[in-house]
Image 1 (cartoon, helix red, strand yellow):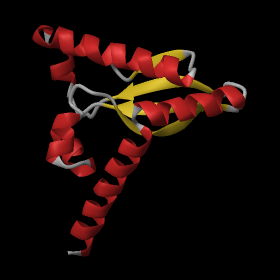
Image 2 (tube, one colour; image 1 turned 180 degrees about the vertical axis):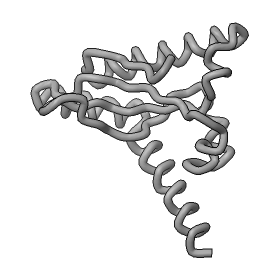
Image 3 (cartoon, helix red, strand yellow; image 1 turned 90 degrees about the vertical axis):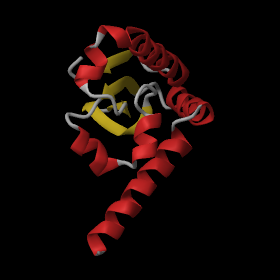
Image 4 (tube, helix red, strand yellow; image 1 turned 45 degrees about the vertical axis):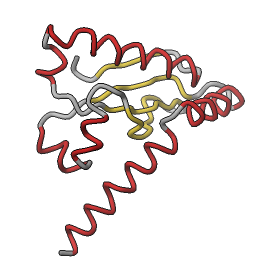
Length: 130
């Protein structure tokens, strides 16, 4: 029972943080801070899950559907000393991403990444395993 409650609260908090930060206003504030701070946020990194079980472990089904083709804020990381990256995630699996029928959806993900990169003042987009 305790584990179920913990996992539910953890998922809810992850979604809350993602929604508070991962929106146009949040990205604009991150961009302003990045520019004022000397441009240390250099990369936007997109990750995708290895399995459906992983998706179920980190979020609720409704939010996973929403994040399937729309990058959501997932965290930050340090790719090099003194440099930072923004981590975004989609809930699509690799077979979804490489399916030719989803090419237009993948293009939408790439356009979103480019817009976020521009908004926050990052230099690069990186894709995990794609």
